Image 1 (spheres, rainbow, N blue to C red):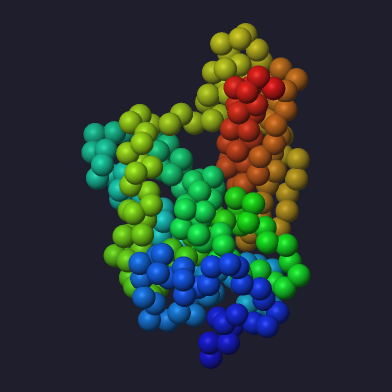
Image 2 (tube, rainbow, N blue to C red):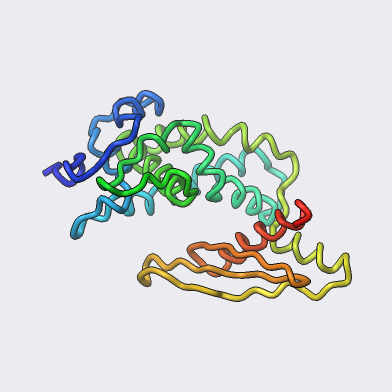
Length: 236
């Protein structure tokens, strides 16, 4: 019954075992196979078993709820739009990748044998963090998942006294302040099946171009705007 949730001979574990990671998560799993499944990269998928993709889907929603609740309680007088900007910054791919490294989830991801360990890819790390959150939720309930989120997101939430600005808005204001035309966004690639579509978008301002990708056109546009802002701030 648990075969699909175990480490197959065709899979390669990282330098941190699922058992060691469970200690870092401060949770003793009643069903350790859940954590193993959460750590299985899509490269280990076989047939109908899609690695940690289903858990990543669930964990994304659990994380979103926990962070939304934290923000709702911490900033009782802020308008919805400002809280939404805080939320987006706290659940974005870069933040999740940082937490993956912080907890050593990056070193526990299970890849197919012969597959490069793509632990330098924020998307891989973010998916693993969300899948682990789902495993905590399914095994221990919402309180256990919430405790993990509070441990690793509380300080990050407190570190930003004012709501972060949306990257697209900031890029538009940068262009207007210099008398330039507004940024132009263009979808340059679309990949994946309909239920897991990923978009790549390029943005151009004053002959400067940057790209970003995401699960929606809007998130890809924000990623592209962030990348271009980083280049502009660096003087590139």
